Length: 334
Image 1: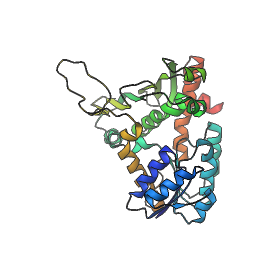
Image 2: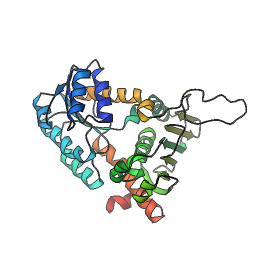
Image 3: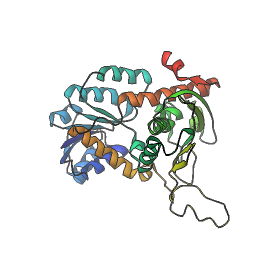
Image 4: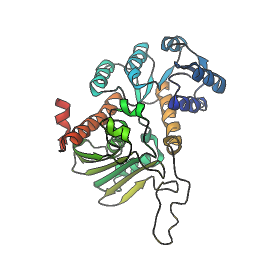
């Protein structure tokens, strides 16, 4: 199949490399405002260059991968749907919840599949955790802990348009909690603080945050996030049930140092970047998208799925600013 890629920045170039290595993909058509990025993809992967999104569609692509700037996501998603081309778009659907809802309304009723990129759904550990929940081997869950700790704060330009730590970072935790447990969040309580990066404080955001999520069956999810984890990129998930407890990310590259006498775990080199931690997950995610393009599976993460995680982020942001619990139905009505 022939896959178009719009956006060849850090993640777009990474996707191009992954797609070029998939057996199902015969060729790539790429476009980006930066000519050097396009030239690099042409040289490295034998891609066909296009000078505009319209030219990508005109090249006869079977599927489209959107890795462009967030503000471009809505228009490009809708252009793909209107062209009848299955589309994979990195999260978020749009910069704000209202714009995301506009996209949802526009694609509802269409038979063109839209796959939003939440790569943790394709992480082997997270997949195994979901299977453990579905099989019932854990019993009823009572506590879920999801952690995302970045090794260093993002630059000021990124922070200025990120929407805040809950919308930018924690949203991955929110999505994986929903997906693994199969439950919905009904109430949140969030808090946060600033421990270092002045530009994050000046932007009105926090660099360290936690949230308590109450699920619709009474289970509690504890979310922990920070921009300051110098030891490495730490992503973990714990599920505690009435019969058993399991953990995702508890392996030798875990960026955590044990001080127990005689302990040599973890013994490996810590993860330092999200592409390092989730290389296999990204490959599995894009492999799944080629199956969506081929028509052998539906979208594994729809626009509606992505918006559910965004609602939780909205509720946590409100809770942080107003120092109170917030129910999800409150933000949905706002």
